[in-house]
Image (cartoon, rainbow, N blue to C red):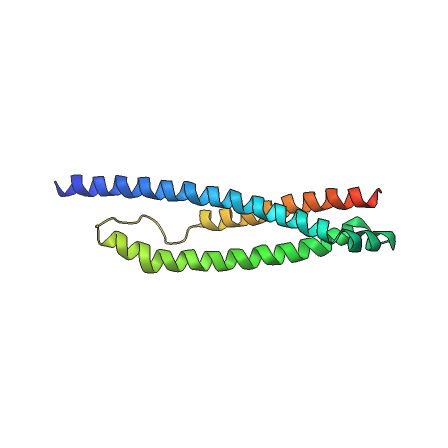
Amino acid sequence: ETKLRTGENAALFRGAFIAVGMLGFFVLLLSLTGVLLTVQLMLTRSKNQIESVLIQGVSPSTVLVWYLKGLALLFLIVSVVAFFVVYSLKTMVVLPFLDGFSFAVEGQVLSWKTFVFLGFVVVTMVAVNAAMIFVELRRMFTR
């Protein structure tokens, strides 16, 4: 009976974690869309300054590198802060809560998959933003 009850609790928690993970992935996609729109608005707002820099002979790839440095730094800082928040919540709230239900967490608190996924998200966001910025700069440069 105890094993059956523990199995039911495990199934409920796995279902809850899958639901929270899906919600988190949806929020991640919304955040990516928000960042893309913010970068697009930022480029539109500073259009005159960018065009004047391009007219002076600065190549679009140089302007792209300026924007990419700022975006990469921003994404890195946000990712590190979010990672530490999630890690502290997991160790101080989630794991003690699960211990109260005798639900054993398999594996490490942090896995290599977490680091790989976090790196993939940051690289993808920087790459998508780089492509958008480059297309916008090329369009401004060809006018």
